[in-house]
Length: 453
Image: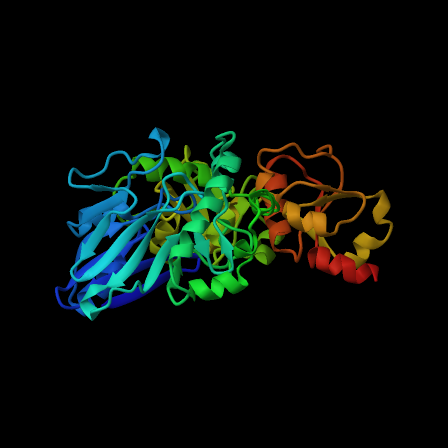
């Protein structure tokens, strides 16, 4: 048997390829939308990708299920569990719909379907047994967003992101029952999760890429609870705010997207910039001068985690960026279902548009007479609860394009996050909304605490 794990660190998302080395057949599990990596590995190993599947309708990235099925002429296997709201649409005619107990055979490798609802109603996991190795014992389980290393899938995304009322409690109840199904499996069985540290699909995901069921039973908090009510209370508390793009992902992954292909994107500095404007320069360069209305999301490994809060799927996009990044930028945006990049303004020629700037101040400058200042804390709710300035108002940085800001537009507002990264993004969002007198606090709350001691 061949096994390969693929980790997309920009989304903290994991996909897998499993193949039978005797028959040279391979299956991809939870594929991302840009499928080049899978093709490269299959060609290098001499495999024919005959099947593709996923554990559930994803909320945090755009699925490559349909693209892979078409590109590789592979059979798609999808869950047929859950109610009518969670059925796949616009699938290929030869798609196989899976129920609990069904088997997918990949040559001599067997994947048994277990219905493991909780994160979503249709969620399934796959127990792998290598029949070609002469064993009847399960080797491991692909858990998707069911069991993570050190955590479990959150049940509140449907309610928080997709606005489906009442689904949090239903999901938490189902998750408790799904966990009990693991009692039938041995400690040595490996756990292959769909996400790692950095994902918003749980609150305490580990950075280790895989685990065993026995290790998780001893170290994962979710296995400590025998009382369902106590489990549900812990599971539904202090979950991180889900990025706004999650709601769009549920829709497009259920209904499908056009096949992704890299295209030629216009470069230049026209008089009019189409659609929404993102400035991908560093926060240090942005603060010196920028076009008012631009959202500043530096182009680094955390780009998607931050940009997903602000992307408008109904508008084209202009970016101020390095034109050499056109291909990777298109691939990154495609991975959250956005295919409408219209213009790249070279960052070394963008100053013709600049009409604004902002200033930073040190934590020491803020602390002096801070009780008389308008302070905006843009960290997560859990961070704010752990400690905050008494007179600080809280609005999550990702909500600043839509939620009410408790100050007047002509007030001088001091903005901070934990370390200074998210507050720089918040500065651009506030400027775009007409808050002209905003000041960024260097080093964030960590620096403020130090300055107060």
